[in-house]
Image 1: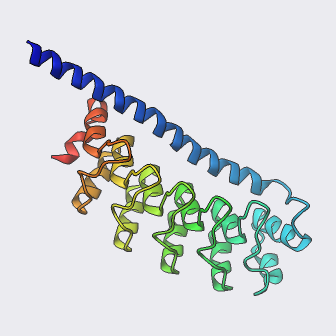
Image 2 (image 1 turned 120 degrees about the vertical axis):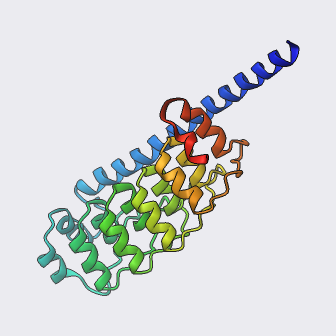
Image 3 (image 1 turned 135 degrees about the horizontal axis):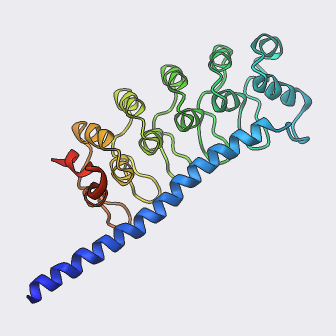
Length: 239
């Protein structure tokens, strides 16, 4: 009986730990979403006065989807212009999902791997926005698959959080490191197990992700999948 009680206590403590971890990570996912929405709202506003008239005009043309006029004003000297948030013209086109202007910027020599003031790249923004065509375009043109933003998020981690199987698969096929960790020590498999995306969990496991990897708090993907599996069956992916 004593052993049974000890075992029961252990389960309760584990579930409490997972619950706390889930709450913290839900806040992180909300922060990512809020960052994306903030970037979009910032871009849609009139360019700040600290930005040159030329830069303000270029961002306005992106917002208005005026490719013809945009290309008339684009030069090798201004192709990597940024706004006060550190977002380049490429970021602006990516955030708005403007494939034609993204393609034009790449053709005119825009630096694909420029980072904004939060350390994010255009590829990360495309992933968070769910712009698969732009993700493919950026990867085909040399986007850095191992880039990390200030939170340690990589493109693969961003795709895992977003829940897109196709983007995770494309990144893996293109050479993304499957067990890269963010600043909390979480891998793509860990964040996916937390989210309960069983299809991505299976894809990562089939692609030889480390199922025993633990984050900085000692939480593993199997622990999270077991917890999430109570409602969505994600634990089955580990079988």
